[in-house]
Each structure stands twice: as structure tokens, then as C-alpha cells.
Image: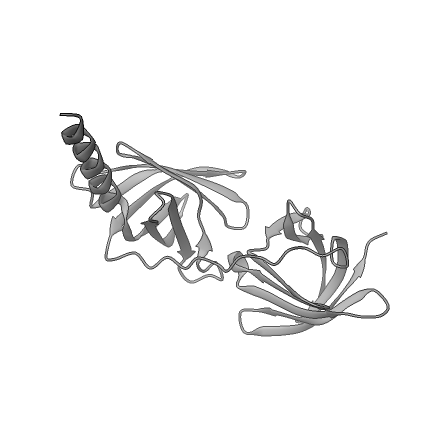
Length: 224
């Protein structure tokens, strides 16, 4: 009898996972505007959920999902877009639709998603161990279109983020930090940004910032 119950529980768990797994497309209904999004959700062999999402027509592509939970018909996940954004939704009875509310520091709005195929989760590669040479706070500036933007960089064991110093210190999470000897590479999927640089003898990190198709020289200097 116990074996039957265990098998039943496993079957129900697998069925539940299948209901959520997939590629979802839909929108966030912002006042006077619709934001088209796509979400991919899948369950790993160890039982944990993974996912990624993109905002159509923007630089926010394949941003990893955080803290994905699925209990009954309730679904919750988070993403840095670049601000931390939380989705709370419910599956429809036929598991073909997901509806709910999305919230961040600016407020909340309804969202709707429809399943449209198999999951294509784009999980980022793991970050390298942070070395003492790169740990700390840095600052640089970008020039594009005749404008100069001040950019901060924070690298600690607990956080890796770019900081838009001229936009209320908005933090842009770094998806992956790759360190190889004195070379540093950063990827920020929420803005389709990458940085490749080299630690110089004068303790600066000199390299190139790429955002979409735009490339600009960028040098970070350590903040005292």
C-alpha cells in the first residue's frame, strides 16, 4: 500500500512539472502600454526549477529567473530586469495559460502568458571565483552620442553589479563574472551588455564595453 502511495505521489509530482514546463509568451499590461515578454521554465533532475525570460524588442534577453516555486496552481519567480521584479501567477485549469501580477519598486501590473512550445532555458555559465585583485568598488565613464555616463562597478563575494551613477545609482546585476589571470569579462543580460578588460600595472581595468551593437572604450579605476 505504501509503495502505491509513493508511486502515486511521484506521478502527481511529474505531472505537475509537465504542466509548468515550457515556453510561454505574453505581455505585461503597463498603463497605456503593453510589454511583450517570453518566459522559459523547466525542471532539473534534482527537482529544482530553472528559467529565463526576455522582453521583446529590448536589450533584456535570456535573463535568468530566480526563486522559482510551483505549488498547486500557484507560480512565483523573480528576475532582475534590471530591478528585482516578482511574478505571482496561477495556471489555468487546462495548464495552457498563466495569469497574475508582476511587481517591482515602481508598482505592480497584471500579466498574462500562454504556453507556445517546449522550454528553451538559457542558463548562464557560472562565475569565476573572485580574486583579491578585482574585488572592491570601481568607477569609470562611457562616452557615446556626445554624452558621458558615469558607471560604477561593485565586485564582492556576495554581489556583482554595474551602477548607473547618473540615474539614481541604479544597480544593474552582472549575470556572469569571468576572471582569467589579469583579464576580466562581465555579462549583464538585462541590458545585453558585456565588458572585456585587462588589469593594468597602474591598478586600472582598461577595456571595451559592448551594449547591443554599440562599442565604447571603458576604463575602471578603483574607488579609494
